[in-house]
Figure 1 (cartoon, rainbow, N blue to C red):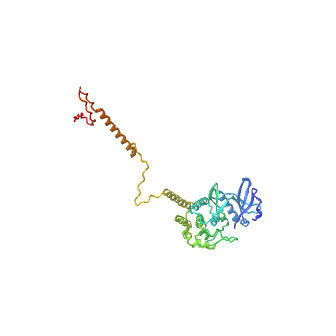
Figure 2: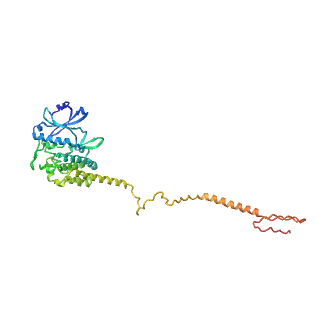
Figure 3: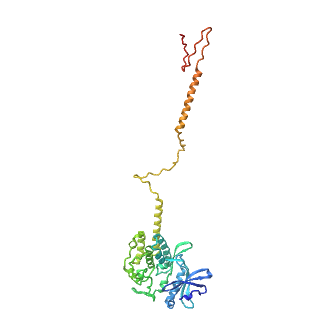
Length: 393
């Protein structure tokens, strides 16, 4: 398909706007669908593929299976068939804006482990639905996992090209390879499973291996094998023990639990891997749950105890309840106020004594007739004894 398609209408409802991708199987175009007021992506396969009856029947069978996939993390298929004028096979899908994981890793480097795990759980959920209806992807790679924002939710992955790799696959004999004219091996060498590299019959566990390699690269921006030419990776998948993430990028401090999870996903023997995408996802969900619980516990214990050489005593409430309903004691009077009250009491007592003495004194006796004048009386004594006359000299 050439660029002269741009600007034209096809299938009576799509207007081609621009070419947005090109690969070994065909080209992808951005198109408008005015009747639905939406944009779509249309993948049109190379014309040479439509000339093979086995490819044609397999495409139709798998396109029907893809159209039945309804998982929100699987790209939606709206329409598929053959173009009338050229006979080329096409698939009309939802149009996405964002980046695939390959471009994201090249731009941003290793992804934060918990964010990457949440993305992988969604991808595995989409794979579980596909495997349930008998569709094995067979060509999982970072370019086929697209990260977008949908419904206001960021980091929504979409799995692309379900089953399209099977369109290119011939029945392989053990140890054989099928090369296209473009020099591409069936599948992508960096991410294919050992059994795929050996040409064996594939099942869902092949996708689990591929996704494990993708996850490894997402976390480290590296592959678990020595840097090699693409075709040399095939031999690595078959016989080379994968390196761990701590060996590849020790400075990242990736949790050991993730090392174990990914290590199981990329076991050489398929029977040693997770039995299903759902089981793989459950392991990642447990990792995320444990991380959430650890974060919650750290927050709860964020306030450190007081430094002391002894065990800290239990905290005492600021105001303890009064179970006997006894009123609380009034606060003691200040010392100055008590002194004033004491002085007033003393003065009142002295006044009382003086008044009592005055009232209790005996009045003087009346003078006798023709007696000499009485000498002045002595001063009153506090004693009740009667006064004594003092003789004249």
